[in-house]
Length: 192
Image (cartoon, rainbow, N blue to C red; front, side, top):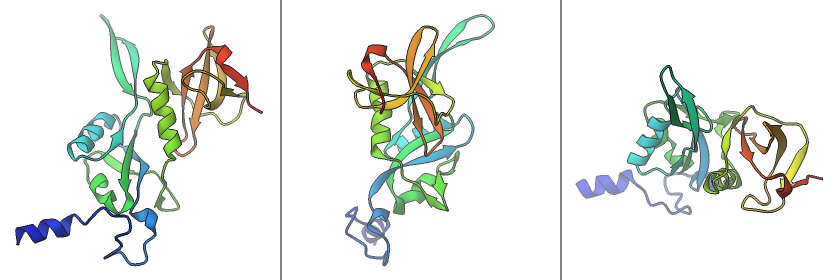
């Protein structure tokens, strides 16, 4: 009896297995990246809970130097405050939504909106190649450029100059957030 209960609770992950879900689109069964909105300052706690439940997730962090009364401290802060990226099939969303401190999935017209795999890879490439990455106010318009060489080749963003350094601001429309990546100006080409 126990064996049957366990097999009923976890149906096969075969995307073509639509038994019990008549009329559902195949995308309902495919694991895609979604964005989870968390309670304030609970991103790391949510990521830890997702890890304990073996749910694939991504919480990009950056180093931040903070000055307290008597000392300077380096902290790991979320690159996108209030958001954690989670990969799951939409039919399994309840496992994610039941985690304490998860507020909701980022949705449009009442439906969870998947994030493009390319956006996740862009963020991972920026973090994995030792570039200085930090949050930036969301931008939509400005002088656009494309990275023509180096580990970030092919990325497109908006050029920003601050403190004699060149940065490319990458904007993610789904969550209306941006990040600034420090880059050598010779690696940039105007976007046409």
